[in-house]
Amino acid sequence: MRYKTPVLKKDQPDDSYKFRALPKPSGAYPYHLSIQDVIPDISHNKMIFHMVGDTGSVRSPDFQEKVVGQMVGQYQHTSENDRPQFLFHLGDVVYNHGEASQYQRQFFDPYKLYPGPVFAIAGNHDSDVNPDVAAYSSLDAFMTVFCDTAPHPVAFSGGSERKSMIQPNVYWTLTTPLANIIGMHSNVPKFGIVTDEQKNWLKEELKTADRERPGKALILCIHHAPYSADVNHGSSIPMITLLEPVFAETGVRPDIVFSGHVHNYQRLKRNYPEGKPVCFIVAGGGGYDELHAVASVEDNRFTNENPLFDGVDLEGYCDDKHGFLKVTLEKTDKGLTLTGNYYAVPHPNTPGTDVTATLEDTFTIEI
Image (cartoon, rainbow, N blue to C red; front, side, top):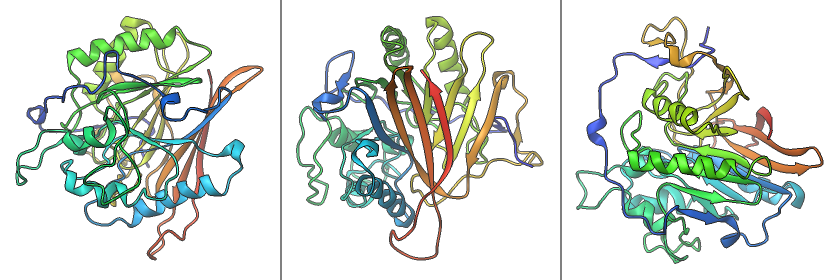
């Protein structure tokens, strides 16, 4: 029997010493990027985008290629009204230490045929530094690829036609006609660390985005999953004790929270004594070859006995196949609706991308 709640992995060492100083922002505070600066003709009535995390792999590109192939197929074989317009990456683009030398093999080559722009938050692996490689600073390559001041060819892309993205910082907000998407940076340690400076920025971003409701959804993205039932990481107490007090202090909760870090798909719901519940999605099965199973209740390495988990339920998961999300925001006469579809990619013992993704889970949120 599997857990139906978040879990904690017992006896985990403190690795907060792995924290890395953040690079200087490439843009101005409060670090907003309008999607119209990248996609000028984005619709004001319907927006569709992919979401995926943990796509890089140091051992085998097979699973990543299959996932990317299916996302490309949704561009090529769907009507214009249902076609995705961009990808929002939930971190861990490149394993294991964010080296520039790995970006061609782990990002530019696999995404060569992906037609849309790619936005991203950085994961712990993107932010780490390889001690065996000539000196470079945390996130140097990520900043070059995703946080440029203008689109440029990337020198270490292997001649890719994909140019650099123009995000203003490693934590930033993508403003769109139908949503404000807040992207956080949770650094290198296993359970994440967020600085007070970023915490204060988050408070202001939540309050600013809340003023645009209900016309716009409020979406929060952070690499380290606050709530999880997996066997590799389990839930992140630092992320829970960061986010929940901020939600309480500001009086603002997002409509949905997306994370990666855990290599599977999970849909959890956090109920509150007052107000609407919040959906927490884990979508970190984007290509790294090792998947993380949901923990068994008989496994004594885990526990769900923590008051921070009160009111949180695991409502759906897929832990044995890689996959990706297709998110749709649509404005109707009744208001704004967010629909998420999780597509799982099977694991045939054949090379290449000749597989067909299956719809594993669907959820809908009325904004």
